[in-house]
Length: 89
Image 1 (cartoon, rainbow, N blue to C red):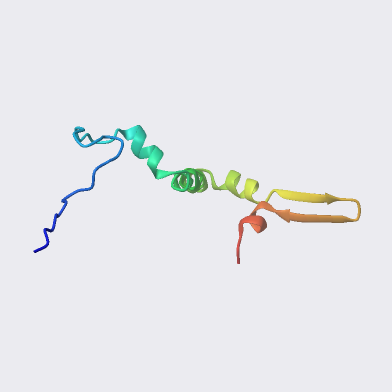
Image 2 (tube, rainbow, N blue to C red):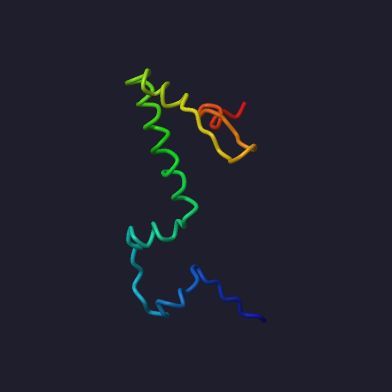
């Protein structure tokens, strides 16, 4: 006859066999998220700022949006507005 051992949880090698179970701190949880999840708030904050700005002062927002940019030198240059650069259509 074969004996079968069932483990309910696996042991954490850093805690050892008799280590107490603690909840990870907020700093550990944020570090575990990684840098990929930090990108979402970095995109969300300027998006919300642009929405508020467009609704509070439309004239200044449109003036900024229509700012002309020129990149290049000599005979080769690109001339476009911020609106054209952001617009994906």
